[in-house]
Image (cartoon, rainbow, N blue to C red; front, top):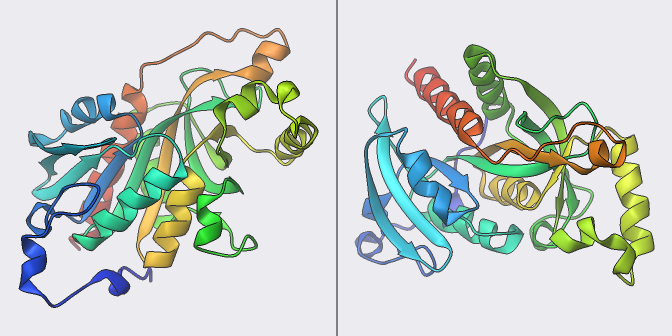
Length: 268
């Protein structure tokens, strides 16, 4: 059974209901058990439109939050911005107001040639090629998604008849370190590790999963991720068809379907 505790953040203090979270500007009264985490603040409203009675709650810095319901359960949609540091802040502060289940809905670039533009990638774990998770857990600790969340995401994708992949993704800190490694002083390391990740079957590259998974593990809550593949630089290098596909709706539908499944499971 999963630990769903966040115990180191709970306080028996009525004043916490009125206090605003330092970064998210939410209060305890805004809380929910479920949260969807896009990176882009501009994607929050689009995701919230899949909820019942969606409404904007607050906006501060890169963090925009909407709320609505699914099958009678309150769900938050909060943007995290780009990268691990702000994603970790979002998980930390949402946990303080009661969120126990997190699903990241983001974008990625494919790393295996069978990962096509427009495909969904459901992360089972993430390579910790970033810095935030190292301030939570030793590097030997795996950044793993919660099994039940992964299962719900897979079930939702199959139920919708959508093309998807499950497996390991890579989380990085530098977008341009990936796309222009040859001009970086440490390019030799970036390029050799990229080849190692590919050889190990890594499906895609993105920037937040490792931090989210490790923070969730530390707080005793659960997290998963579904990523929309925009394009695949390995397919481009091989001369294979590789259109850019920016519509994230299929990944959003998978996340919504997964939360509906998790709500139904917990009702029994």
